[in-house]
Image (cartoon, rainbow, N blue to C red; front, side, top):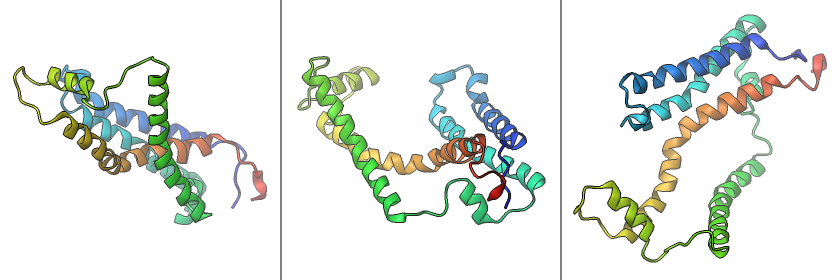
Length: 192
């Protein structure tokens, strides 16, 4: 396979225009209804917008197919950085490390902020969380125990991550999997 040392501008242009145009099209109902970011469908719309870069990749691959000919699935997956998964053990352990490290870094940051006196935290009564909840519901509305709600919030983090994963995959596939390598000239030139 010969790889051009220059970026494939037609495919990059189709990817960028498709990704941006589709995200604007998905968000259009928010603005047409006049509610903007206060729209109750903002979460659903934002999730759909996260998937539009993946559709941009499909459009760009169709342009590349027309200009570079048909390529096998392995070639496309390799170009998008999805295959081969080598070394697999290191990749898996790095994913596990990031999943564990991110909450630990956040916790350490909060401890640091508290130790420096930049903020005070009520980790027993969750008074700030209780105030936020009470402000969000009509006055006099009974709330479950705040500690239980805080525990449910923490327990929902992995569930939210699983729900968000396909949409986040759409962004990663588009911006990091396609666009980043497409903008870098090939290191091997025509000798690959």
